[in-house]
Length: 593
Image (cartoon, rainbow, N blue to C red; front, side, top):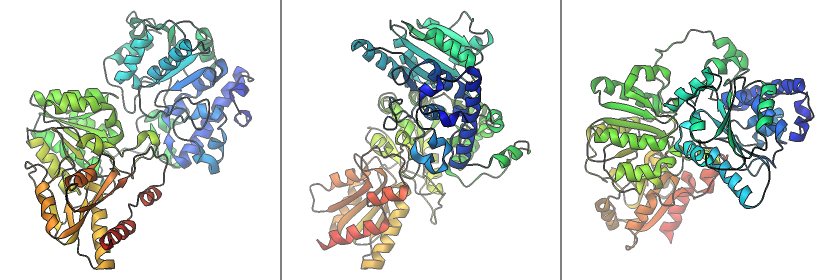
């Protein structure tokens, strides 16, 4: 095997082109084997193999610096830069991150997991090189899907004025996570159709030189192209036409489904490819799917309702079949969260009813638009925040811990935390019905839970918490997904100490029910807040601040503020004293002091 001989990019340079082609085949085999057992990003990595081999054949990393946009397609790069055993030895699969990681290798220059950043980061490296008298090429690798993000266009705009070496490889596989959306893709299509000769050229219009490679999975053609731009004294775009998922038929046939994959049985997947599709199967017991079905039913009744996504339709419950059912009442803006928030504000101002579904980690990209474009204007757009939990994604670049401090501290924003499916849909119905506030709903994460009692349908009186069970001495406030933890804490506390605690469902994350909190002072000594996210700047600190001039003791429980990476959820909860046993232990200790 050639791959077993590759310890650094220097070993790639020793091979002839025919041998490089064999190496590419071995890399694909290793990728499919690891992905089938471990899961990870499938299509992006399979499609970039030849380009990665050609880059390391022509350039000299790490002196020549390669920056991978999103970096979810950097698995082949890792194979060639001293980390091949993490793809060949199952016992070492977890040694590397699914993204570029500076602690792993000098060949990785940034920790990157969000999109549209590589051109700006690479431009910064190039400018720093020039300021310090450095040498070497700087290469940004960016996918066509990432071009829809505003920062990518800002980076290209800046690069157009540079007068030194910067190479931008545009990996055009005609896909984002799902299909691409936006006017610039018409120009990419025209460039592919004309072999790069279309007189309208986005990149040239920005002052960049341009080279097109039609055979983006031909390692020999790519080597020629990269050699021709190496050591250039001006910024240049190399536009390569590649096939997402190349080498694995299921990933080529269904590019959206195979963008990312859980572990799978390759033989069973291949057998299932030609099985008839059942698009009328029952809706799974899943918050995203059930929410999407609810919205589709409302869309039939109210043509003003529109669902919006920024490049992640499936995780928010809108796979292709539901997108087709929604028609023009579903909008994918591409990977452009800032635009999605401002668009929703404009739609709401015009009398529409926008519902923007977004994963917690990606909402961070739109803070300014949330504050300036939406909340200052008090437009009644609805945001559905998915996967907000310590138990969802655990890669350092995709943490979903920070949405509570982010959203709950913006004036005019109403942030709701349902504890069940019924409460969630009731809140969503109210959010669509009301016209006074921008409303965000933290969609519960994990197993669907149902309310045993009727839920309220009107949330117009803001910041009114709900006492689920009245007790004394201790009040436990469980926010959203952690309401169940609050129930468990109350039950264990009664079992171990006989204390009958008050249990509160706050429902509103963004405000304090001062009247209720004040009433607790008559017969309670301790208030405990539990939130499924970081505690710094979060909900519990609002409770503690309210009681700061009183004698009430407050125990705030959430996660510490840190960039945790690839953690075990149970260990993270223990480290933050978020298990029911630890919380009860702390309550008993505080009561005894």
